[in-house]
Length: 249
Image (cartoon, rainbow, N blue to C red; front, top):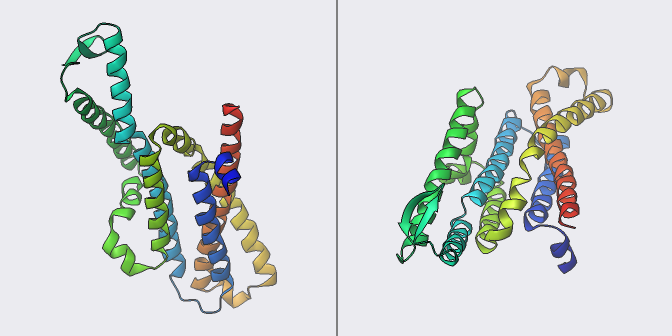
C-alpha cells in the first residue's frame, strides 16, 4: 500500500477506486432485469455530480487558503530580506510588512481576486450555452441529493476525502489536480465511441427488436455511456499521472 501511495497521487488513487466502482455498478445495472424507465437519466445526473465534484476540487486546490497563506508568508519573508517595508504587487505597495495581520489580509485579497476570475470563467462558459453553473450546483444540494439516491454518498465521500487531502497537503494539491482538466474532453470522446460500439454489440446479441423501440433502450445507452466515461477517465488519469511522474523525474 505504501508503495502505491509513494508512486501515485492521492487524487489518482481515490479516482481509480470510486470511478471503477461506479463502472462495475453500471455494468450490473445495464444487464439487470430489475430496471425502470428513467433510471438512465438518474445515472447521468450522478455522472454530472461526479464531474462537478472533481471540477470543484480543482477550483478548491487553486483557492486553497492554506496554500495561499503559506505563499503569502514566503512572499513577506522574501520582501523583508530585500529590506522592503511593504508587501508590493506589480510595484504597488499594499500593506506594511510589520503588520501582524498582513499574511491574513494578503490571503483574503488573493482568494477574492482568484475567486472573481473563476466566477467570471464559469459565467462565460454558462453564457455560451453550456450548463456549467447547473453542473457545479450538484454537491450543494445535499438534502435533495441524499434523498434522491444512496449512490450520492459515494461521491460525497470522494469529495470530502480529497478536500481533506488538499487541506493537509497544500503544496502538492494544485499541481496534482490542475493536470486533470484535459482529461474530461478526452474521456468524453473516448466514452462516446466505446459506448456506441458497446450498444451495437448488444443490439446483435442481447437486445430484441422490441427492446430497441422501447424507452428503456435509451436509458441503457445512458448507463453504458456513464460506465465507459468512468473507465475512460481512469485510463486518462493514469496517462496524465504517468506523464506527471516522468516530469518529476
